[in-house]
Image 1: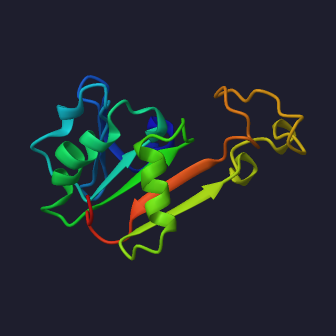
Image 2 (image 1 turned 120 degrees about the vertical axis):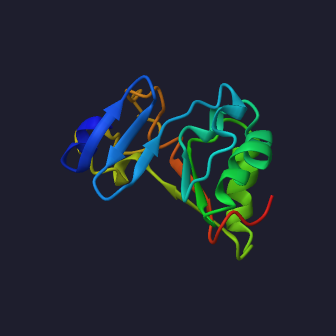
Length: 153
């Protein structure tokens, strides 16, 4: 992450899990191993990567993440590959249901411009294991987000 933001970074701290940006922006990094890690903060956007493997995503969203978005009317992005029918899958379905407050998308690995096309198998059934351990055709990345503010529970 540091390299991506280097041109606009004022400072970064591994210990504080934070990058400060030119213009006053701040990026904080938290693990959802401890759901309450971000409590008491306020954010304009929260990004949960690998949401499909978060042990208790529903509790984290309702009790810890969503409240951090209230003050700034922020939004949240949940990224990952579904792991069974857990809460990430529920959020994905909500985005597909026509609920005006939520949206969800699926993108196969080949849509990622950072991945060498030679590493993406040409068709299902010939999938090689990707560096992440996921098969690109069998487990497309899924993105779910509330459309406006922290709406919904």
